[in-house]
Length: 174
Length: 204
Ligand code: SF4
Image 1: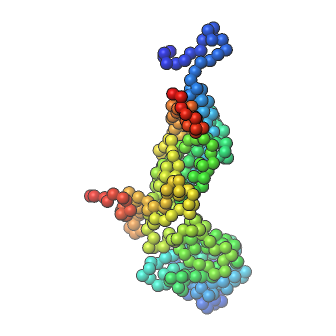
Image 2: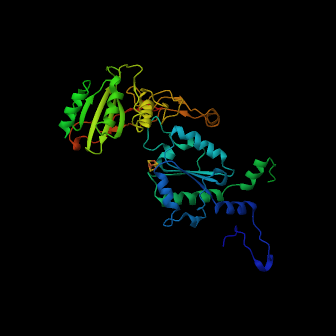
Image 3: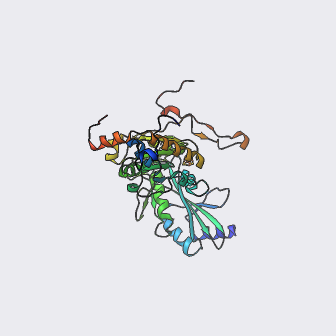
């Protein structure tokens, strides 16, 4: 066991667990990601497959797909974002409570994909900050799961407490 | 069956003129007779379906520039009938709406209006169906570039935070299209190279 890890010894500590606030907060956030399925085109079919039993996204604690942005914290943009839809995507993103993350699933959401045309936004990162991009047209469910695991890692590295203090206007102690 | 119908149509509607076609029966109809024709097709000839409604842009240099196309189908006769209608005015193309006769025409006419800017007189709700209402162009017109033209987005508050606008898409050497003629083996999709939209000029 690495020396960095904080180990709980019940004989010494009784009913007390010692850890860092960041570790607890991130651990909770990591394992209860509530995705907002922003299914806009064909990629959404693979997103559905990911949620279905065969690929089973609930193994990672993310099966609670919410169609209300108020209850979701990770937007999975699965599909072609047209300019007409861009405004809606941004508004839904704005309605999600902090902290929130975005996964751009597939070529279309990442770059506009094969739609080099007057109607398609060339990458959803033009309107919202993206945390993880998934390549593929469409990406296989495994690829999306991989991206979600990467997102979990990313969440695990966040300075959550500092961010929280910042958002509340409290000066950082450290 | 086709000949019988052709005979009957030409006899009954003197304004129809034959249009060359490789598949189904096809006629030109002047716009002023379109409603009359469609009504009779539905009520007397048994064409209960309007299966398709679209338009053609022959290019700015041609007159008539726009032609609207209608495909009717008779379930009883199992026959398709194509009617083409040349729009009289090239700048403000306008044809009568068939939405009151065939409800299917409603959204199709809105699409044609959206893409070609052809107006349909008598349409109950002629507004854009695919692009947003404020969009200034008609994208399927010949002079409109596939990549698009810089246009502001219709949501000022979103634009304020994201600074996004409709920009010409990078064509990356494309679009990749097949030449219309020739053997399939020779008509593989190839680059038409419209990369002039890219920010950095391409060097060969
Ligand atoms: S990336 Fe491919 S599969 Fe996904 S929305 Fe675009 S075209 Fe469809």
